[in-house]
Amino acid sequence: MTSISKTWESRTELLSKYINTNIKLDVMKKKFIVLILILVFVIGIFYTVNPSKIFGKIFNKNSDTDFNTRSNADSDILATSPLKPISVPNTSASAITSPPPSMKGINTHTEVYGTGADPNIITLGPKLGAHPDWPTYSAKCGMEFELKHGTPLLAPVDMVFVGFSNRNAKYRIQNGKENTPVNNTPYNDLQLWFESASPDWPGMIVTVYHLYSSPLLLGHYQNPDCAEREEWGSTKEDQAEGHLFGAFGDNIIPKQGNASACEALIGRTVKRGELFGFAGSVGTHSMAAFCAEVPNTSENPNIKKGNHYLHLVQPSIFFYWKCYSPDADFPSGVLAYPFECDEYQLPDEQRDINFKYTSTK
Image (cartoon, rainbow, N blue to C red; front, side):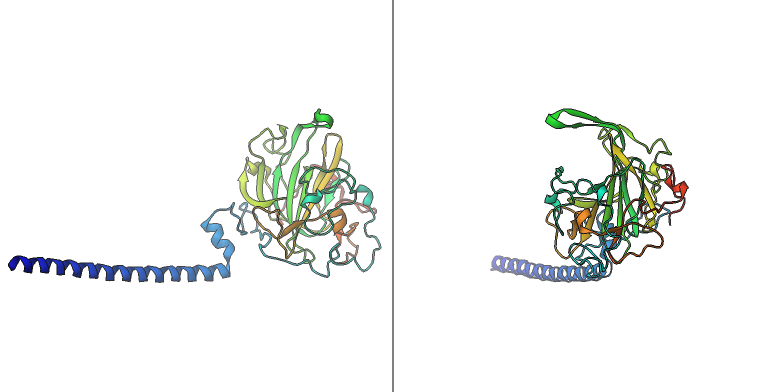
């Protein structure tokens, strides 16, 4: 009898411990669920207020999330293009809205339009450029303005300098006709990226490449560590910094490849008509190539990373262009030709390819 009683007591004790344990586990589960809900609620509030800073800190500066970045100690914080749909303003003249009220002085220099962008990657507006029969290479994002080497380049719109990549080289070996190697000497391929600061084109990205140099890079061709490599593509990393955009996405690069030697004025605003660079050359072909990515309410199926609402357009057909002068009247949306025309010229010192700005503003 005593043995049975002890066995019963033991089982009762075990059952009691089991029940108590389950009760504690239930309480812990409930507390855990409550904690998760609180955490989700708090993150939700902060995400609503300022998602960019949160995700920029939680992840890293190369994440898909659009956030503000400080590229150097002297630059202002850059507000990059928003990751949300933006309609092209109805008041801005373009191929998808309406022409300017008057065509006087508009599109008067089509003779400098070169090969357009690859139609297969154009996702907003007309797919074909000014020369639809001219062949283009795959994923070519922009159009060349056929300009002499060293031609000063003017800002087509008020815009903020957001990034650069120095890919200049003494030469590049490329396949020519019938796969015959062609030595292109020199091979100027400095790339600059800008974000529009104009209400006519909110969030628009302007990419300019095949440049010789820029006054926005204080060390370019001034510091031997920011000049040109021997052969294009011969180094693992390009000198690059800031917010960089391409046909298939965008990325933020803090600094790479000794970018500090270039002393980029990231964050500096250049007003419409102000100098931002000098045309370069690929072999005997001198030019300045322009890409434009315009935000829209539809998603771009080509984008793999970054802002899915940015769309490449054909610059020669999508926009209306006009020569810049301080007294010129620009209808809403009309861009300034990125070169001197109609007798306007920059100050003499700014026409020197070695000219550099001295201020970040």
